[in-house]
Structures are given as structure tokens and as C-alpha cells.
Image 1 (cartoon, rainbow, N blue to C red):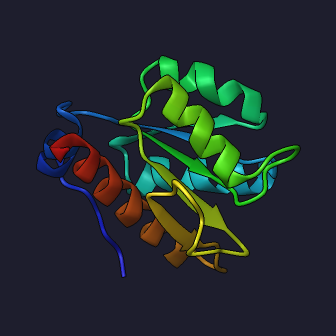
Image 2: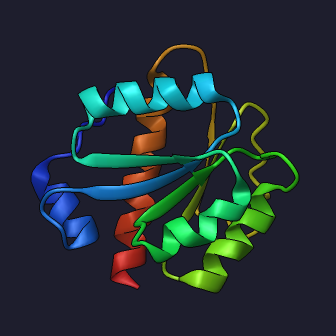
Length: 139
């Protein structure tokens, strides 16, 4: 299932008619490159900024992220710590966990998506990101 975002959806969710700014915390450069390549083609309204180091998350959020996507266990930290870092910078920025070992009980996560073979997982990830950004903008 493909959940393409229309320009109207991006405007409704972010207040910006052009872009949804997403920070992607991923230590696996191949996964990050696949996500960036696929999303740039299938979802051109999403700007994906890859950070391999969880310490770079705070600066990326301060630069104006609409959402943060993180692996469950990036190096030297975990998704809960990433969510706490994001919340300390901007509590309105949602965090979505994209993991091969998803845990629905993650604290402070606004969505959890399983990494799967193929592109379906990335389509589901985009659905969760758009939903989380939309909810954050309503609150």
C-alpha cells in the first residue's frame, strides 16, 4: 500500500506547503541511503536529514525538524533517550521508531514501524510520520 502525501496534506500537517522536515537517526548508512533515495522519489515533499550520531539530534531539531525517525537502538543510546533529547529541545516534535525489532511499549514514541524487506516499510513509515506531525500540529 502506498500512502503518497499530497501538497495539501503537507500544508495541513506542517503549515508549510512544500516540505516536511524529518531527521533520520540511523547508524546503518545503507538503510539511511535507501530511505533517502526512495523518499526523494516517492515522497518529494519530505526532506530527510540523516544523522548517524544521536548527539546530533538536538542540533537538527533546533534547526527546525517536523519529526524525528530513529532506530530502536542507535549506537550508544536507545529510542527512549532520543525521544527525551527531542522533547528537551522541542516537545512538539514527534518521534517515530523505525526498527527491525519494534517494541510498541516504547516510552515517548509517537509511532512504531517495523523495518521490512521491500519498500512497504518505508511507505508505512511515511504514513506514521505524516500522522504524528498532523497530531503534533493539532495539539
